[in-house]
Amino acid sequence: MAQIFHPSTNTISRVSLFSVLFLIALLLWLLAEFQRSSYITEANVEREQPVQFSHKHHVADDGIDCRYCHTSVETSAFAGIPPTKTCMNCHSQIFRDSPYLEPVRESFRTGKPVEWTRVHQLADFVYFDHSIHVNKGVGCATCHGRVDEMPLIRQVASLQMEWCLDCHREPELYLRPHDQVFDMAWQPPSDQLEQGSRLAKLYKIRSVEELTSCSTCHR
Image (cartoon, rainbow, N blue to C red; front, side):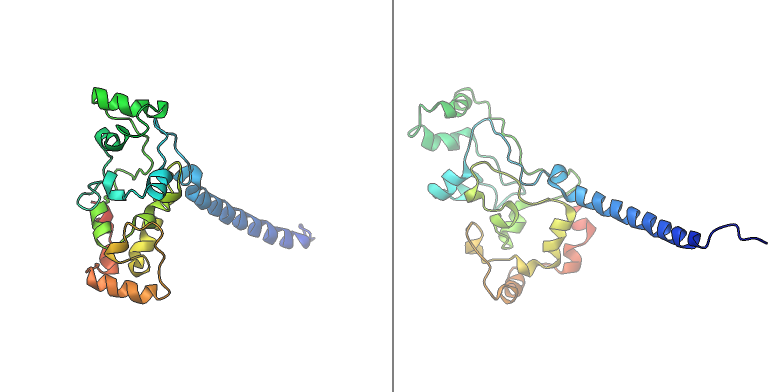
């Protein structure tokens, strides 16, 4: 019986099959990268605010501690947004006639809060507690980046689950002494792994199994 297909058909079929598998793998990789992109996570996207508040000016230039405005960060799940009165503690004396601060003065006069644009937004099904992380030695800059260098605040991390798990799997790489938690410029020492392991025992950090358990963050 005469041969129906040319011998080269075997090669073509193999190449075609490999190409299809390669294309599927490529599409899956592109999808995964798209899910991690700033288009989805909104990382490094500066947000316009009703008042052009500069963390760089207030933190780096004026030396204001995080806790002066975010008063509940050590005791509550939420860091807290400062009331207008906190702003007016200073701005009733300095820049009191600045047109940029008129929304703040109006808020103070009327008692209506300034409608700030939220920057860090976790999904509703995720439980997060600021006080736990602060009191366990996780610095502000670890999650929020160098806020003291940001004229406009932006989210620097993806806030996706894999980002959280990176820390929960190896917390010793991120822990710092309590008196350095609010130091934006703090850098891990050369023996961070050793120091972090010591701090993990001192702060009674839970086991990796507990930290990575679904019920830890999804309650």
